[in-house]
Image 1 (cartoon, rainbow, N blue to C red):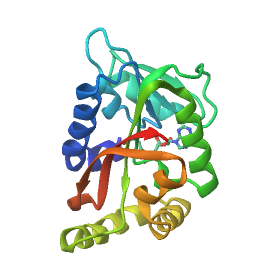
Image 2: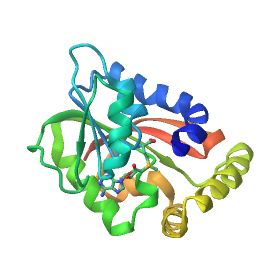
Image 3: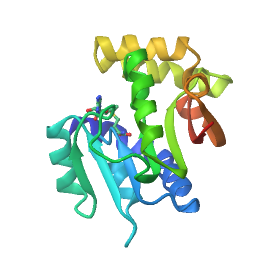
Length: 196
Ligand SMILES: C[S@@+](CC[C@H](N)C(=O)[O-])C[C@H]1O[C@@H](n2cnc3c(N)ncnc32)[C@H](O)[C@@H]1O
């Protein structure tokens, strides 16, 4: 799949940081919301620790399931999942929010918060406004890749940056940052977050 071919190598370090957050905080059972090709969900798996990947794109999920046989995959809308409230200790949302409409981002985060167990955590990866020379350079590359992803994806991504990136989105949706790792080379961040 083209998506996996282009992005998997540059994203390896980020995937590892997400995995580290999940393992360090023992965030199982874990759910990867909008899991795409399942690479991150596959890296969350640990014997005896359930991990589930959810996406709305069945073709993408079939591909994910063919590569990551230990993980369960489910085709559903991330803003209206079939899970009971408080089912997961960890929920990962990686590079999905920026491409969504503003109102939908809020619905998805509201659903994610409701699925979290009382001591659960979100691990969210997404873009931040550039903050130094390295991230400003990375922003040019990110913009070029985003442009290739299609008109609505690009428009929503621009809106995401304009509104203040991941930091602002979490704050506006009642999430506090517990820990963060900024990644200048991707003008993005991996954030461990909890509901306020
Ligand atoms: C840019 S990809 C990110 C994939 C993956 N999280 C990663 O880090 O590689 C965004 C994914 O969100 C999924 N998606 C978009 N809208 C969704 C929705 N309403 N419910 C579930 N998945 C959705 C898309 O099908 C796509 O696989």
